[in-house]
Image (cartoon, rainbow, N blue to C red; front, side, top):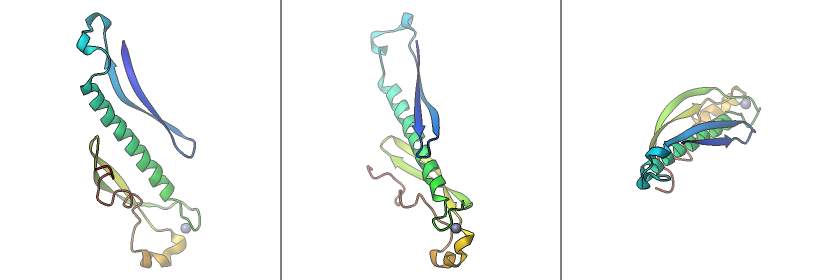
Length: 132
Ligand SMILES: [Zn+2]
């Protein structure tokens, strides 16, 4: 048999996204006792892929939500993306974190706030997840 492990994320806006996080092949004619079920090596790969999928979806959702201007509900432009390295329990991941431009509606407060907004900075101030 073949086993595909798929994760389905439902975002708060109701949209869904699927990620294939693992694949196992267990041809029954060649199955040995030590190859029965999930193996540790399979689990390590699947956990890493699962973590990657969750991280990316969280970043995507937070980034999209952060683009909405709290003052005028307009969508703010992305200034650029910064590469961030995150150390987690399931490995080190390189992610792209957007920086968001201030909205034209409050151009005056740009000076006070000082440049583009980094919505993910507060989640990973030391570039790793809290468990570490
Ligand atoms: Zn605005």
